[in-house]
Length: 150
Image (cartoon, one colour):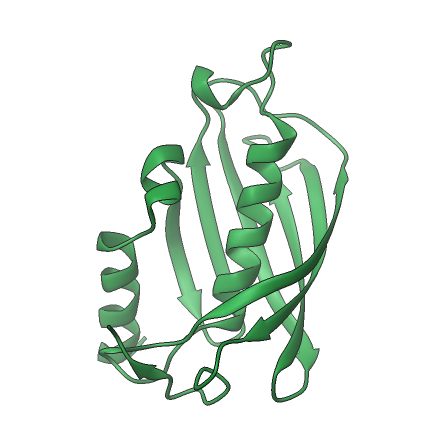
């Protein structure tokens, strides 16, 4: 990992979104075409049955996928994209105390539209959900060098 990698990951970890702050997930790995986010499941993340709410899980799949598209090679710059579609499949469960790990990869695409896959795992390493996504870059974010942060 080079210095730009460290700087970009550290910046994102310190300057996340309001949603990230509210939910408490963390970007733990980030590189070209790949991202990993983690969430320590707490009671506030669970549904009435005591399992991780599907909406929270879908958010993690979407977030990791977006990061997988938006790694920037220039320290101090940023890339942005928006979700056009996200198809999710729920296959298992996580409960209070689990650490859910979501790994996402950019699968391909063109200059503006990109495709991703993401997989979520519980503490036991079981797959609990997966997703395929379609994203579109914001203007200027098509280039891996990105644009200056606002």
